[in-house]
Image (cartoon, rainbow, N blue to C red):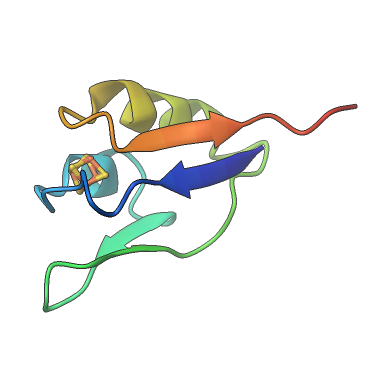
Length: 65
Ligand code: SF4
């Protein structure tokens, strides 16, 4: 599963960081960074973050298996 960020849509409100601070981080210039791709420990929180983003700036590409 890979996280895709639409940086043009992101308004840097930090909601995703609240769900998964180990994955999403805003820097001092309000730019969002994806620190790691989700694993089995963070996948549920990442899915919640994707659903919670008010700008629909996050999406997930599921890995085929
Ligand atoms: S929740 Fe959405 S708009 Fe807010 S920082 Fe995360 S990606 Fe950006």
